[in-house]
Image (cartoon, rainbow, N blue to C red; front, side):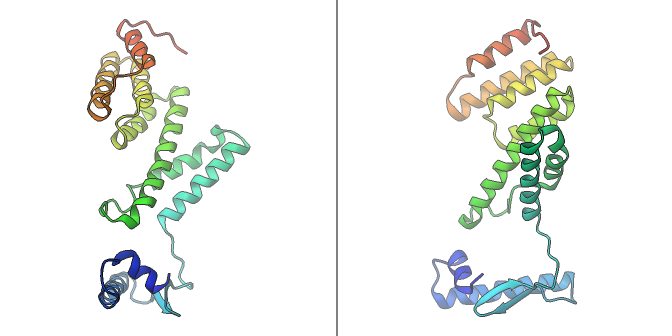
Length: 213
């Protein structure tokens, strides 16, 4: 990446001299941190006004791996079916350890990647929790649904899935509790009420009149 691009990306409000000085200090600190881990290799090189990773070193980035697995899983699902792609989706879930640069939430440069990666993560959680539920693996489905709610607490479809899962494992009280959480979240965040389908599910669970589908 060109030096001027880095300067504009991170220090766009600074003067050129100040931005260049900040960049030099940052690169120096980054190189020292990497040398503390691996003193035998130089990871960041500079040539023709560009910084780049040493091509002789095999560098693995979790973001690249996550996106690669996601694309592979999508391809398998499209060519065959979800059941065949499950193992790849599970690999992607294991790899996602937290939102992209979650300690740098207020830096504009990272927000687009953060939201994109989080959306992919939520799609996988949604897809896999539905798959687990349809195969009577309710505990795993519950775990994944809970992860969705922690990142987006207005997902009414996920609340319904949680209600169904808890009902199927004989925990009707927990199912009703999730309806109340749904109602509270929608009211607080969106000033909205649950939709008809959610209310109907709640009434059926409340009266213990929900048939297995």
